[in-house]
Image 1 (cartoon, helix red, strand yellow):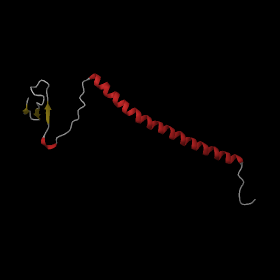
Image 2 (tube, helix red, strand yellow):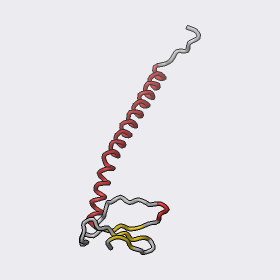
Image 3 (cartoon, helix red, strand yellow):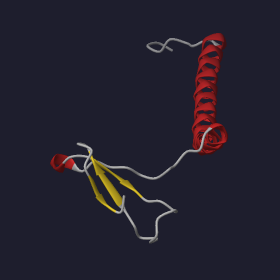
Image 4 (cartoon, one colour):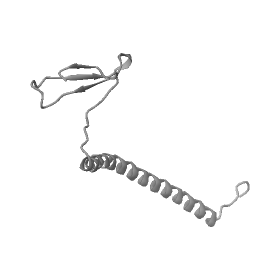
Length: 102
């Protein structure tokens, strides 16, 4: 038989072993990356929830949303449970002027 070199069993066994190890490493990497993603998806909300309760124990936090009002300037709106009307609002501007039921 001329033209085709004979492969010995040792070389083909080595190639099969390398192929099997490569496949096992890919499966191992996929397994742990999937586990890491799943862990991150479940732990992140739990940590955020626990963080709020831990911080809330130490101080009274108000989770109201805030925003900016642009070029009109900044102001503070205050409402008090002690005011005569439940809808009474006090607006305090950045320069110290007050409007409403202050």
